[in-house]
Image (cartoon, rainbow, N blue to C red; front, side):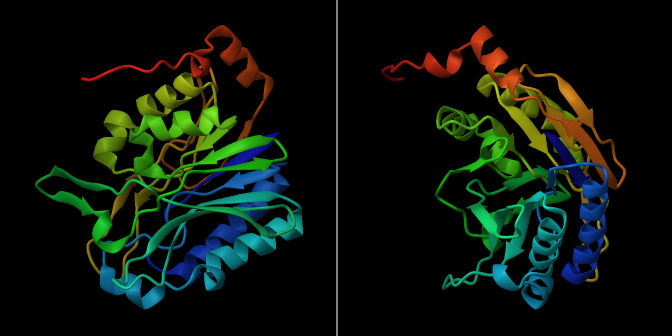
Length: 276
């Protein structure tokens, strides 16, 4: 199965991002992809809560969702919107960071809300408090697709191996990790963590990423690491998209999952322990 990783540099304008997304999905289909995947917050990269409140809406009305559903139906291609920032009915007004898997007929097959919130102080000038604007999800999601069961995660979830192990033990053969990694943590941790999750689970890892400087009409512009990766079940990086905006292709072979798990069947070797 051929997958296309769409590496984007989304702005804080959802309509603008929807137009860029539609063109990328057309390119993915022209390249023979049966599945196209996009990064975290495909619809809006913004550090301004004021801007987010002005332009974000409910999932069903999101312009990127509408563009992706149309493209999926037009091309008979599955699409993973790595995540969309969408409004919720929460009393405190927080958004959801929601991954959306769309079937080849254009219908929504599954959604997953990011569980782990990126609340960190990377250095004196780069601080994130995702939980102040987004409410965390509380449910892991694996969905059956034509190529095999797929587990959905988002960005900071990558640092929590128990989630990925649980998805693999629930039958997932591919794990998706759409992201908008910061340049600092990306350079230090992105590839090694993705390879570790592949090795630990014997899964294919598909990680479409945001890249470069994100245009912003309000607030401090953000930057992202890029380097969308595809990692094989034995831990080899088989695709690195670099730092440019564009569509990159990878051919997935599901027998590689079986081969890796036969060689090291660690998913069946869990033991209970006491302490510490």
